[in-house]
Image (cartoon, rainbow, N blue to C red; front, side, top):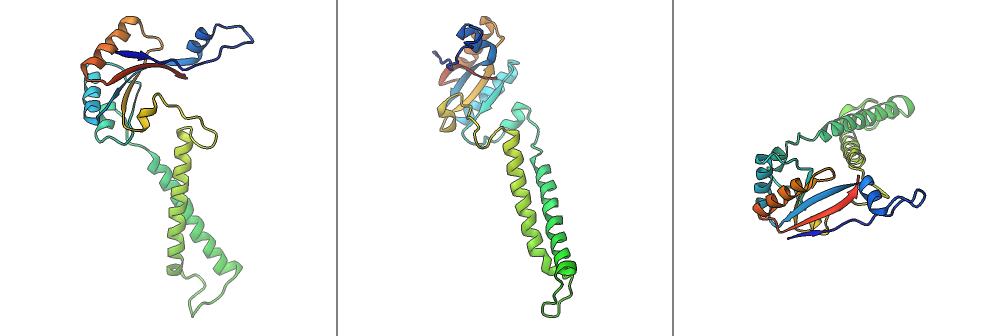
Length: 200
């Protein structure tokens, strides 16, 4: 049996817009079901693909192997950012040490030449790792809208705990399409079904 949860939204007092109409105009209407097992989730996604249902998103408390191909998701290009930032760190570390030991403060240590490349490798490696890791985390946070002051968008609190969610955007769907989704959820062994307005 479906339970309806509507996110509270305040109407625009300046224009006197009705609260419910204002909420519908500025938010997306999400119809979602919660599953208690990742195997059921994968079967439900396969069933949705067979029924040609447009899945808006799938939420899981941990990575589920085999889910990406079912959703048609491409491999992340975050490693490209890691390579770029790692290259910058490598060039910065090696270049800075080259400048320091050959131009700014040339000192002979234990008979080594000014430009002692083997001695530069450990610090160059560490700066490569540092720049790559910090750069990838920064890009990840920017792409996903995370960071200080970001408001978390959770459809349901249990999704971050032990539940698996399949969500459909029904903002412009008819009652018959919503009934079709409800039948789909019941057929795939859903635990609970919810409906919620979320920020667009």
